[in-house]
Image (cartoon, rainbow, N blue to C red; front, side, top):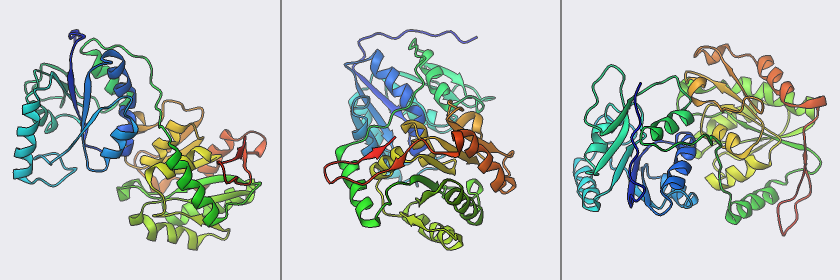
Amino acid sequence: MVKSAKLPHNLERIIIVRALHLGDLLCAVPAFRALRHFYPRAEIALVGLDWAQGFVGRYSHYLDRFWRFPGYPGMLEKEVDPKKTLDFLKAVQRENYDLAIQMHGDGLASSPFTLLLGAKVTLGYYRQGFANPGLDFALPSSQEDSEILRNLKLLRRIGIESCETSVDFPLTKEDEKELLALEKEFKFPSGKALVGIHPGARAASRRWSPANFAQLADQLAERYDAQLIITGSKEEAAMVNQVSSYMKKSAINLAGRTSLGALAALIAKLSLFVGNDTGPAHLAYALGTKSVTIFGDSDPRRWASLNRADHKIIYKEGRIEAVGVGEVLGLVEKLISNRKFRGVYEKVKDSDLAYSW
């Protein structure tokens, strides 16, 4: 059994390495919260991918500073530019951080990168079956634990105890204004429940087929008299258009039309969200919108919501093509009592977003 070791309460500067995508960062929010609670006056910085600068700004109550990840050999999230990497390491080393925490993958490449940041103390995971590369406090990486619990477990290694596993996603007035503009442009109908469909995912192995999503959307619209809204990034517009073209019912197509904040504001207003295991599914978990997530080759033990009452999953041992439309509909029925959604969209007011629940 690995024993924990408490660090001083007066650490002033902490840097976290997690240069990953939306779902990954949302799974780290409980750890960010616990770290802030334990070190309320410390500067806490995140080394992240380019997009995450806005994430740090949104979570300014947990995170204070953003460092743009420059790329590093073996960390596949970004192409390596040796000069940028060397310049970055020199700049971070000059900051003389008290603690560097590696929360990026199993640590095979990210732990050596974290050691090069030059912090006085280092903490992180290392790959099982390999030796600790030199971290002061470390644990062997487990791929079977929930990612939320995994990050909290790491903090316990340095004496930070937290049982708070909830994920929050702060919404701003700007998010709501952007959504309101979309509601007016696309004429969201009053008196119907809004159901979100997200057919995209970064990896093809995590995408249920457009034909299946279209069939599901039609049945949801018919059974529950719901307005379907299909979401996706600009890069996923062709896929979303394909889903729309297969559908017999009408759907609002918002592919490429929402910022992260507006997408989150929309998901917060939905009666139901159905999608693959990708970032927007984690937004539904964080915002309390009932959901069904279709898993491909990602492991739900690690990536699914801890709240299985409101967030159902379906997983066929990596064979996403084996998931049937009827099976997904069955999970929807478990979420909806008396074949009726908990709320419907009401007429938009110019002064605010207005929903009836």
